[in-house]
Image (cartoon, rainbow, N blue to C red; front, side, top):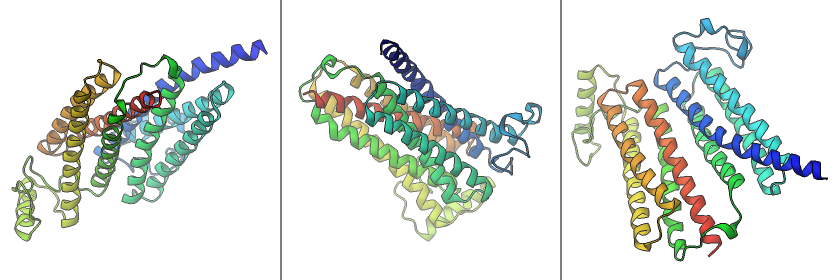
Amino acid sequence: MPFFRINSNLFHIISKVLSKILVFSILILIFAGALVKSYEVGLSVPDWPTTYGYQMFQFPFSDMVGGIFYEHGHRMIATVVGFMTLILSIIVYLSDNDFWLKKLTFFALGLVIIQGLFGGLTVLLYLPAYISIIHAILAQTFFVLIIFISVSLSKKDKKNLESRSGISNLKKPAYFVAISIYIQLILGAIMRHTESGLAIPDFPLSGGYIVPPFNQSMINTIQSMHFDAGLQFVELYQIIIHYFHRLGAFFVTLSIIYLSFRLLQLQLKFSIIHKLTLSIILFLLLQIFLGAMTIWTVKNPLITSFHVLNGAIILGISSLIVIHVRSLVQIN
């Protein structure tokens, strides 16, 4: 029995460390996936699950050139993330964690397997937009789930948490921030995979308008901009998708301002929630800059990919805010 307890404690320590490594590994995976899309090399490797007939890790590194480097590299990182999730779920199961956490970790394992299958379908079905969009949404969902698991593994006993009166007033603003960011990332995925990223090629204006009317005059202006820049013409639905993504950024900004205002109103002692709120403000400003640069550089692949990565980081921070607010609410 003491031997099992020692192993259980060791498993618990390993699971905490591994879950944190997994969180950062998923960010690397999201960035790698963004590079594949930004460079439009999703079919550089036309077969799946093999790579030009080779088993995943037997493919010669000397042949990883051009688009193959990004596509095959993305697959290799995804495989490592999947394997790490499998190891994490086994270790969590063997440790003395709550049963709900064990089930949640196995759910995460199932989710990453489904994510991998959708990644394969994007290749086998020649990059259909709806599959690619689901693939992108699952990636962000998996990321949030692993963050929650990681925090749950590291959480101290509630009696050690500092109670803060009035913290319940932050619960709705925190949820509003997280949900608005999640929806915004869905809109971003739809925009990227419907080739709507430059549907409105100017910024901060939209087709020359502050408030676009979406009439024939606006469409003609945008088509003229595309012609002058040598860009492919777009349809009205792509313009609307792009504008909704910009509108989503506006609502995300409002939600973060609202959260910050409510936090200041409470006049609480400086805490982790203050740090996270300051962080999300800084990353939001960076995200707006990257979004503008994506337009101004005509979707430079690196800038566009960092825009996707930064969006995931913002979602992760918003998830941490929700988790910490909930923890404090439960002990008041």
